[in-house]
Image (cartoon, rainbow over all chains, first blue to last red; front, side, top):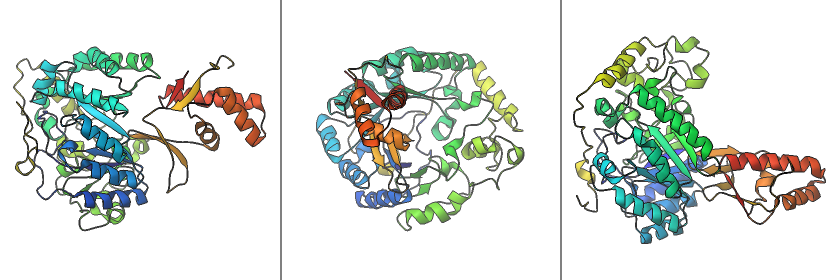
Length: 363
Length: 94
């Protein structure tokens, strides 16, 4: 599975944005360069591409990029805020062979949603969802859950139903980058997490055969780490807007890891030979207790970005694991956030100067 | 088993594509962020889910093509169709 980040620019300013806090500089890959990446990815065995960002609709040549992915035989999913989508653009994307559209929502209603997005976005998203359906695309919704919106889950489910979504991704915030910076504002309470999980499970049963509901667990509240990326360098690769190839979308946050670039190397060579992809392949890098743990084939020692962020040691056991020597520290942090009564305002994501939105956004 | 609705004409959901993986040569169903590798039987069934064939038509076609016992086939087909529908990959059009 390939995640193609077409640009870091975005009209939204969500406090959990997946963009790196400090983005690297460089020219965005051209549609022609993406075409080569898609061909090379297909030859490697990649079947899916997520066309993402930032906001991919800021790329005026998006239909060309979609057509290139389609020509390479990839299943194409557009991962968008919906801002910038009109009926004409939707028709162009349909014509180009786009398979599916995923729109992010920040909440079920505009007051809270627009506050989270840092711009007036919610009503435009509702319009975009209608356009997606009218153009004949299957619609997925993605909602990042956190302290401020997690209690809105029943209304979020109703929104997905009313918009005719076929798929709903409820993704509890994973704390990297911007979300890490805003963690004290975003971390839910244990009670919120338990309630939301029960609601999501009930909805999965109730809506079976109608909406597929994916619930991404808030891993800080777990005792076993997530099988991050299904193993490092096993199934996933990300190409960022400047052409760097990453084993995971957050990998640039790991100090000292260097990345090869599709502008200068073939994707297959990067996948097989690069230092970054080989760094955590297999089990040799694993510390104790992972190295001797019966779970190591299932969770791969958890997330490397999280280990680096929380322990300062990229080789450490993911502190989410109760066997990690850092687990108690993580639990203390979660508890402290829960006890906090005064919540500071969050830091909205800023756009990197070079890739400001092409279309001015009304505020 | 026999309570499978007779007028249903199964069809792949609009977000699902049936494809032969060019690297492994296996039939796969592709959908956003996921895939399902089909075994031979499932592939033969799914490729007949075009929104026009009913259960009996699918069973009939397979029985002719593979000279197999209809009752066994029917049970297999129902099991496959039900599972795919539960996973939101197949729509039961009436």
